[in-house]
Amino acid sequence: MEIATFLPKTYTESIDNGSVTWKSPSNIALIKYWGKKEDQIPQNPSISFTLDACATVTTLTYKKKEVTNDHFSFELFFEGKQKDDFKPKINIFLERIHQYLPFLKDFHFTIETSNSFPHSSGIASSASGMSALALCLMSLEKELNPTMTDKDFNRKASFLARLGSGSASRSIEGDLIVWGEHLDTIGSNDVFAIKYPYKVHEIFKNFHDTILLVDKGEKQVSSTVGHNLMHNHPFAQQRFAQAHENLTKMQSVLADGDLNEFIAIVESEALTLHAMMMTSMPYFILMKPNTLEIINHIWKFREESGTHICFTLDAGANVHILYPENEKEIVYSFIQKELVKFCQNGHHICDRIGFGAKKV
Ligand code: DP6
Image 1: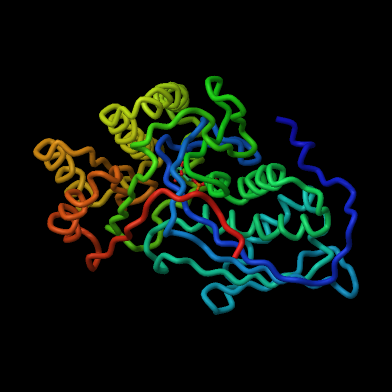
Image 2: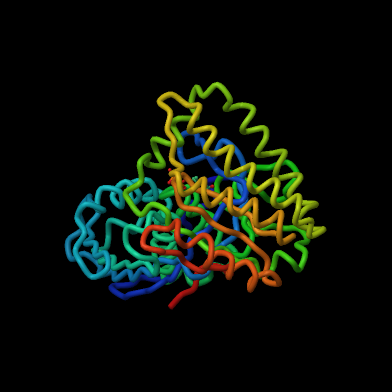
């Protein structure tokens, strides 16, 4: 995909000030992105369910600078409070995207952001946060270039969000999203995410994701450090090849509604992600004893109940429990009875598949 597509055309409008708000969801990868090259290019393709309840709401207020200068000017409020420690990350993001949005230094911005999920829940907010900000900036670009189509808007929003955080590229649309070039997935590419383009069986339409908050502390390994662990990793090449194969296998699973094979791929991906961390140098164990308790209980319950509950993990101890709509009563009552006790203060979030970001 030609990156030049995202260089701006001449703007037809000019604008002095305004404000826009976007609500952008988090997502959960079924096939994991772990390992990246320069410029936020993933080492392998990934696919995710877009979530619904876990989201970031960001309001961007913009005002044309009276005197133009050569720096980015912005204030940042997180949950109502000024947050200067987030500023360097945003500054890096603005640096990276400036060539694609050349008006960024012409405005003073106020960015007000808040998450629907509890602060320090251990849930990564980079996907929802970076995608929300990218969408707000795209709305401003659309004011300057009103003829932009929705398709171009979404593509560029995903492209920009990726430059903030790789997984954020998958948070613009729903409900199943692919990011990263994959030979068997038409339109897939490394620079923006696309809606999964093939048939999806009904059973995957209303999937639930109950997130068990096992450890609400700060992330032990930042995503940058984590992805870097794949450089010179002894199993890196096999892992990247496996992600491609799993995505190919996933296509017939999704088309046929083969839940057993779905479970096998999703759980294996989660454990492989953690295996990569355990076998890198330096090495990390990000699961906690309660993560393993939950996994063992899920396996036992699945065997006994004949349901199709399964788990996935991100780079942390929290567990995402996935299950289809038609099993929600029995599975959720199991979660409440047997699993919530392994969560910090019993905290868990009931989420489900969502359909992408919305302008508020
Ligand atoms: C384990 O998107 O947080 O959640 O690009 O450095 O911001 P950066 O990384 P990030 O990595 C997410 C990795 C993962 C798997 C996934 O979501 O695919």
